[in-house]
Image (cartoon, rainbow, N blue to C red; front, side, top):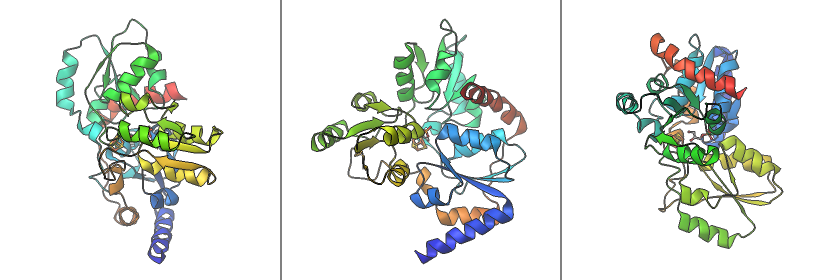
Length: 310
Ligand code: 13P
Ligand code: SF4
């Protein structure tokens, strides 16, 4: 405990000295969420990164998120506490393969989930997150064919919500594909009063049990506004920290993964630690850098998304 208090104090001091802001995703360890200046979903974090006055952004999240912050802030220093904090979805879509894939679908507008590299963003017409994907696809004329990458589960969900056919890149998130339908149903039997809420990166058999589907922020808001006292939460378990903090009288049950593992914790997100945050503020490393021509190409679809989400 004492060690954590020292680290918190050290981080606060360094933040002041560097004029830094810590942006954290809900999937970070509770300690990191507690030291952050802003906690949010992918869209909220991009919006916050776009408007911060800080000189330094410490991104307590994964690589594509820090990269998006850099795309929006070329003159600021963007630090990622652990450069190995990647994402299985982003990794499932290497830019050279994606370029070849695109060639097979001439005339298609490309909508890419923000969970992709800057190089894939640069190949895209629109970026979306799980909170605005339906809105963004609906903003595209009905007769315009669409290619959606890299998450096939979010893509399928968006197709169902919009009634649009889309070509899907076959990527998926290792965390959201880990949930067991059998164990979820067992949990529902044990807790018949619990409301199931799920992230759209989950597979279809899981989503069909959900009373509400949304981004991490949408799940948090729904669980706070809904009068139910008990929720089964089907997404990375880090989100439960804010749910429990905001509604200590409610019960939040993390949905069980297939195996007896902690696979409902994102192994990439959880690479970040308080120690690494303190260290990156001390050394100003590892820093995210992008070639300017790539940044400018990736900026166009990111800005389009922010305009459509304002
Ligand atoms: P959101 O925060 O947009 O819901 O996305 C979840 C996620 O998997 C981030 O990597
Ligand atoms: Fe990527 Fe899934 Fe981890 Fe999100 S939870 S960062 S989509 S691997």
